[in-house]
Image (cartoon, rainbow, N blue to C red; front, side, top):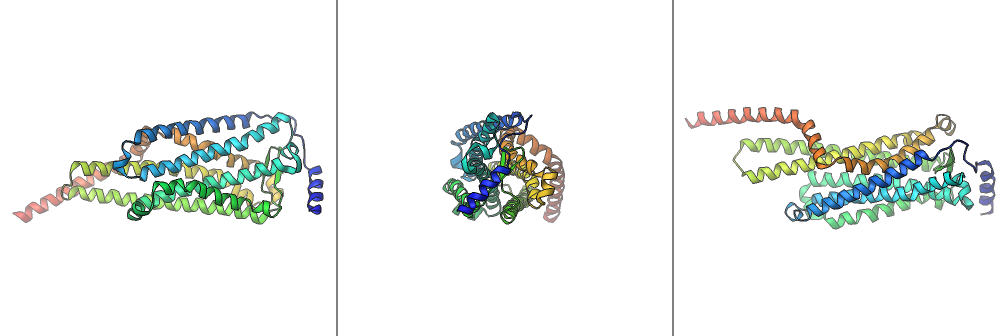
Length: 352
């Protein structure tokens, strides 16, 4: 313990304790305001949707409600992360001190870095849970209806928090120190912790690949459902209510896929600079300013997610769905009419 304290004390002398002149809190203030406002709007929209769907959820099952449970947990995670991290940066600007100088024994720096790693990993795990839920609902409907319930969705959030807490606590258990980055308002995993830094970046990358794989599987299954529905139009009539319910289900699943795909692409883009930063040399990273870029991109993701949900309202999703599927729908209708007329002519000739 004595050696650790001496090293920490000597390194604290080398680290700057005052912010460079000319640093402005404008960007951090805008990010904090946008994050809180976006998450509150998203929560209000979710509550409104829950109230609107409460009377119709009994007839449709619990798949859509479970997806909305996971979306709500994602928004709550982003809101909690924004409220716990951004005020520290604003306090640093208000006192014109770096994070190392805000508290004794680098506690503020450690708190900030741990919170950044924790909420970034929790957000990615939430996206993976949403993608896995869609994969099971579309690809394995019988298993989904029997085993996956709304209670399992409520248990996802504490499970993800426990996993993230255990993984992000490894540097604290090893008595590692987080590094302070320029201009002194950021702390994160340092390049001296090369093994843990690359392990963390690799875990985020694997989760992104898993989410993309689940989304791709959902796309393939939706295409198969669409083709089955096209063939059923030429078969015996199953009633207008059955076909209408099938079209509504396809539309809702496509809307969920669009929303999840955009959130996944957003996180992938925000995590790419951090992945590059993790595998770069420390000197080249500082020279090219990848450290500040990576940390800002990671923090931007929790701001963009709620605005994506707030902007992509059902009318906007219907418009996107019509733009994406209109050409395919026209081709499908022409092919369906042609195949159906061919089958009807053949059946008439057989009857004659």
